[in-house]
Image 1 (cartoon, helix red, strand yellow):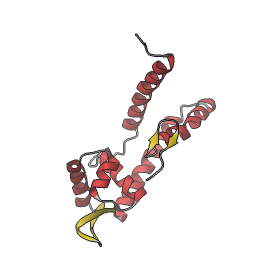
Image 2 (cartoon, helix red, strand yellow):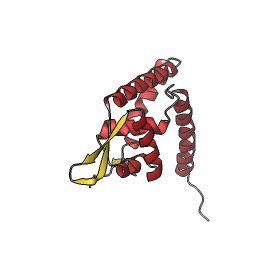
Image 3 (cartoon, helix red, strand yellow):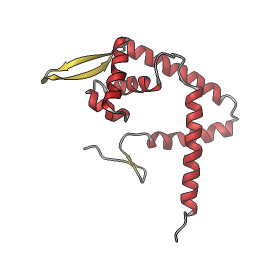
Length: 157
């Protein structure tokens, strides 16, 4: 009978604690714009980062079902934060793009979140702050799309 190794137990403990900490930080730094959800802001951020996307590609990037993305797009479109455009090569296909108003709202939400995070960091001494800063590059790399085990992002195909 094989049991969990020390590395497995440590990995599971880190995963559990990291998930809890990330969740608490996310809740404490959530933008105060109550009418939009985290999913709405995430979709705006994806559009700002990647440019116009087909709804199916956006759903895949956001890891939601197509009907969920349709609802998200409809809410954002009703608030003039995104707009749909027919693709020039296929009149049946559309892309979704962030509007200037959507970008402004996203920038404001990011600034608000940065201020909230800065307030959380104020309680840290210099050594604690340096330790947090030291893990940011690794945490950031873990969130890159296409991340694979072994610390190397997957090659895009």
